[in-house]
Every structure is written in C-alpha cells, then in structure tokens.
Image 1 (cartoon, rainbow, N blue to C red):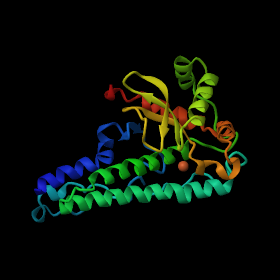
Image 2: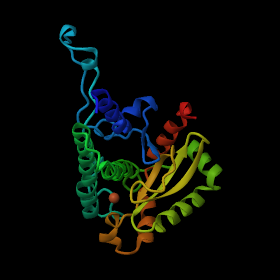
Image 3: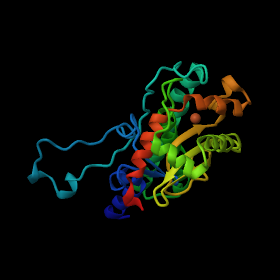
Image 4: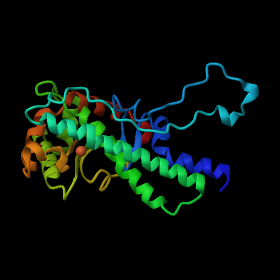
Length: 274
Ligand SMILES: [Fe+2]
C-alpha cells in the first residue's frame, strides 16, 4: 500500500477525533454524536501535538508541518468524591465502575487503535473487522461513561431542567414525568447490558429516547446524547442485586439537570448539521 493510501486510511480510522472540529465540536461514533465533555474534550486524547514555537521551514516539508493525529484516550477524573452519590450509588460501586470498568474501555479503545495502526503499517488487514468492532465497543463505552459521570451530581446539587429543555421535553413526550417514565422503562427493559439515552437530533430538532445494547448497538445516526443511564450490572449489582428498576428509580435523584440543560443548549446551536 502506498504512503498516501496509508495516510488516507489513517485519517479514516481516526475520524472520530478529527471530525470534531468540522462538526462544531461534536464527536461522531456509533450512530451518536457526542458534545465535548469536561475532562473529556481535552483528555479524550492524551497527547495533542502543540505548534512548534521555533519552526525551521528549510528543514521540513509542508506535510511534516501538519499536526500529527492524537493517539491515545485517557480516563477523565470524576468531579466528585466516590461517596458523593450516596445513598443512591454506593462508593464501592462508583470506585470500581470508574477506576476499573471505565478504565478498561479506555485501554480497549487505545489497544484497538494500536492494532489498526499496526495493520496499516504491515498491510495485513485480516483482522480489521475485529479491531473495528473493538474500537466501536470500547470507544463508545468510554464516551458514554464520560457523559454518565457528568450527567450526575450529589443529591440536591443537580438543579432542574432549564425552561428550553423543559419545553422540548414536553413537546416530545407530553411532560417531564412522561419522559422519565419512558426512559425508566427503556432502561429497565434493556436485554442484557446497555443504556437508556435521551438525545437530541439536529436534523428534526427533536428529543428522543433510545435504547442501547452494550455500548454501541441500536443507536440512531446523528443523535446527540444529552442524558444517559448505565444499566450494565456493574453499575448497580453490589447494592441493588437483581433489582435494576430500583436502581433506575434511585438514579433519578442524581440527575444533573444543569448539565443536561447546558448540553441541550449547545446541541441546539448545531444548525450546520441540518
Ligand atoms: Fe458502566
């Protein structure tokens, strides 16, 4: 394969990151477009190359001046203590969930990217389907968890839906309570492991509720997640055992409506995506 072909394929593989600027700060993956997340827009990648403060035009070609693609994702820190979500999410669950499970998805995403890079270098694409599947699963897991942490706040700290968000919810679902009832049902009825997702689609400018299996299945292209709840057993089993519905009911006490409202306001500005 030619150097140019290698270069072009590399851009395709890293498109989730590189398209961020082109899509007004939105990361596209698995059918969902993610808005930048605090602790995630920066550290989604570990090393963003900085401009050379002392360029040497005579010793570098135009191609060499082009910034290299970011190479690694990193685990964003929580913005609250492990016990901050008690009693609804216990400290042990939160610690394991963030430090072990989420970290595993970050590691898996980086491994998939490394394997794809190696495939490009060797020209051996026999396992590209496996690596592509791994990338979709682990990177979607990383993005959803990063959003999940920011979607939650200690009891009494999450605020209320903004007026625009409340109006959009009422327009789409009839009432806030109806939306919550549907989202709870979506979450409880996930077959196996997955998520419930409240999202905004800039094409029809409507909110909708999606059910996601694993981290990437059943997504709708272009939907921007605003509020997500993780119903993998690792999210609740230590405290709630098999009572997923009890966990989902308790989780509503932790929703960071100020964060969700800010995401909705940002998503509404994505007019260029229509
Ligand atoms: Fe999880």
